[in-house]
Amino acid sequence: MPVHHEWAQPVHAVTTSPEIEYNPPMRKRWQFWLGVAISLLFIWLALRGLHLDKFWQTLRQAQYIWLLPGVAVYFIAVWVRAWRWHYLLGPMKRIPTRTMFPIVAIGHMGNNVYPARAGEVLRAVILKRREGVSVSASLATIIVERIFDGVVMLAFVFLNLPELARLEGHSGFIGDIQTLALWGAGAFLGALALFLLAAMFPQVTAKIGLWLITHLTPRRLHARILGLMTRFLDGLASLRSPLNALMVFLTSVVIWLLETGKYWFVMHAFDFSVSFFALMLMNGIVNLATTIPSAPGYIGTFDAPGIAVLTAYGVEQATAAGYTLVLHAALWLPITALGAYYLAREGIRWSDSLRAEVRE
Image (tube, rainbow, N blue to C red):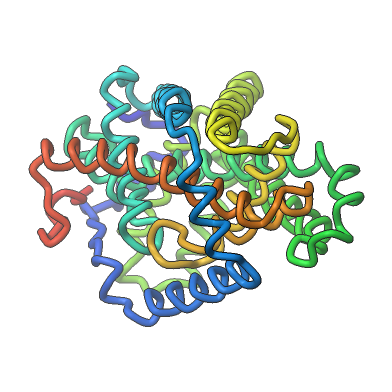
């Protein structure tokens, strides 16, 4: 059952069962085509100067058996993600990790197939359907996940800044990554600080939110927005303890180290070798790049920076391109297939109206 707090009582008194209407993102076609255009640009950056004969030879000679342990390690990382979400939701409802795992897999599938990271909304909807946790509270925990993921990705980059400075001259594409990392650090750490303050001082946050809502939004929407704010703050409850916040951070580190482990295993399928720290840097850069709008599946925004990092380390372009393409496919296909299976088992089709599923 959701946790109700003393500061939230006045909000509940005016709440009238609001609902969130989810519109399929394909209706916003300009966003879809903008993402396609950005992906095409990144694909051009990735492939310019590539010798296709060497590229195909690299793919033919790869030892694909190494993908098996890589996929296994990645699924362990997804299980840890499910545990982290279970931990974040704990103050509202204790849900076993085995219950969370299929929902997390569905979320990955949605992010890989649909534009605008629709998988995040999709897993929040399914969690409400199965466990009764409000969509707004679920989305609060999902945003917290993404903030911690961003902080860890930036940590991977900052750990390798001295090495990156040495590589700058060899790759114009990543030459300004230090500046981008500093701006990214400011954004993610600022968001993290804001969420931690909101979690630790819910009464103050609720008062500020109430003032903003009553003064900046139409009166007819006050009840709905106040209800959403209340449930959103409920979703931040796990961050009220510094120990809990530290646990979420450490779990996020484990998740991304495991994912870097997949990069390491897939590397053994190809004829090159770089350090684990170099792969951590590649992981950090490509995942930060995938926050840029793109076509579904992060086409281009994953590949171009990945190839750039490897070529900066002296890996031949055709080999770097072959490795990055296979790695991208290995990250995309297994979890997408598993998520599609779980989604079919839920009996939900994307063409269905989800309005009834998200009624708060």
